[in-house]
Structures are given as C-alpha cells and as structure tokens.
Image 1 (cartoon, rainbow, N blue to C red):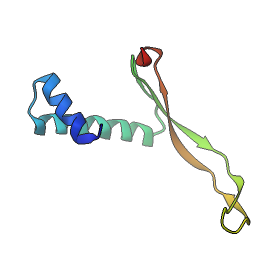
Image 2: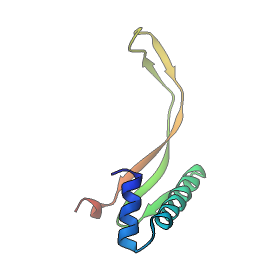
Image 3: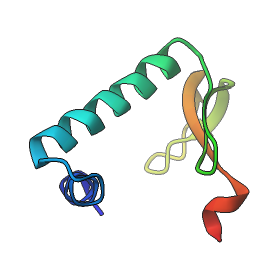
Image 4: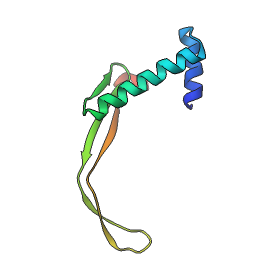
Length: 87
C-alpha cells in the first residue's frame, strides 16, 4: 500500500473527501515527524511506538575495496509494533 492507497482508504472509511483525507494524513505524519525531531516518543495504543535511537560510531568495511572505514554515529527511527497489531 502506498500513500495514495492509504488516502483512498482513509477517505472511504472516515467519509471524507480525498483532499480532506490527504490533508489529515499529511498533518498526522508531520506531527509524528516533528515529535521525533524533538526526540519525543510517539506511542499509538493498539498500533505501536515510534522512537528515535542513537547508533554509535563503528568500524565497517567498504565492500568494493575491502578497506576499513569509520561509520559515523547517527540517529535512526525505530518502530515497535503493539502486541495487538499482529492479531
């Protein structure tokens, strides 16, 4: 399912027009993105939790040259699904 399919599903299930459903989805995604940018955790009961995690710097290997390289520290978003999601 892509974003267009999701907008169509939201519009059908919520009785909204497609532009209204797209605006609602965009607002939701923007709110989640802003919260994560502020290092906040986003917990949606019955769905799951989005959280920013920090990965430490580490050594890696360039697959082409087999040369060792330093991979810098970075932040990544982790998603942990709720137990009810898979049922």
